[in-house]
Length: 482
Image (cartoon, rainbow, N blue to C red; front, top):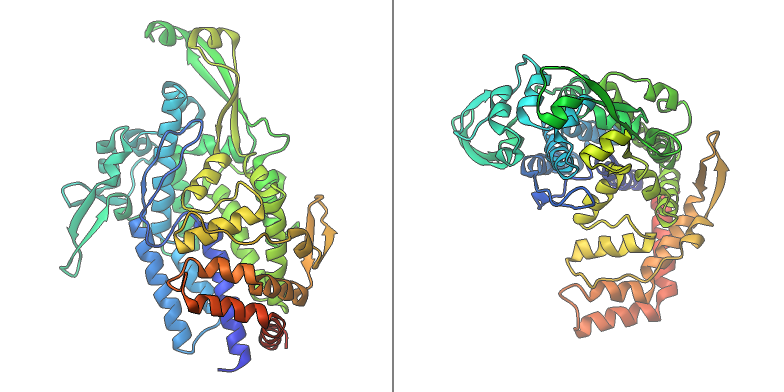
């Protein structure tokens, strides 16, 4: 195996992780449920077994590429895109979004006003938005029906879709899945994926426009219907303005910052003005997801992919450690200002209704990845998730010293981007990994914990650290930098 091929494997593994993590980070292999809670969400269970199964198939394809000798960054990225642009991912996002929407609106006591701001939280209301279509879904009786028929059976209880059913496949064999994962949208490529994402999200327009585009929506109600449950006489009133009180649109404060962190510059993603003018929901999703792959492609196909990966590491560490990443996510919010009469009669108060970004932070935290803290908190959470031990703890990394391995440049929008000296970053990481405390922290959560072998390994690393570091620097240097 020559070093160029080995380098391609290393780059490909990291790039694939970036691609899948950036687009479908909510999918965790080996765990079919995720839950989280916040001010407006008590609990939410999501079945993602089908998508996890598809992810496993994709991993098998990638292994086949490597062992078959046909590995190339471009071909592997094509395989990853084939997974992302699929019915499975549409179903995962749908299974996350609609139960959350229903629970938030219920908690806020705003179900009866939801439709006035284009939020359709029930199965029947979503079916009405979809109109006539050819989408299908397996129902509780195990037969495949039109999606609208199943959605009408859902009512306003999305747990209906969590039902596990056994059905007969076209080849005559049987399989089990949840109703969520059985929806067939007909996604075959990138174009159809974004079109279907727009269709699936017709009940979420209000969230996307307010949280991400920074638009203001007005809740207009029939006063007599609200007060007396009498709608024969239309006396309407603007009861509330629903808006995002962040200084700038969520797209600019959260997503553009994310794109910059991934190494994209102005012109390589939709401008703020362009994105906030979108009226098609499919374009909104395209403006969020396409730049992630653009960033992956940019790193993978550049003349210096290793430098791109090292710069990504430095920028990500800085964004997490400074709180900038989470602060940006928290700008994805919905606030309300109520008409004084509406506030008096309905009992509402001005202020934050729902923070989408905070929900995402807590959802990610529920699967073990702690973004809400400094970079060392994140590293500890990753170790705990891997070794499945709540007391796992790594020695603190000096993030300032890591950042010092790069030079900074200020982009036209004011974002500070770090360009890594790849060799310095690699040397820094090797020094961190090889230190005695790091080795000891990892070994204590392996079958070697407490054994004489573990002690010998730690003592051996401690006694010959300089030599081990030099060997690793030389090895990785030969693979990655020559």
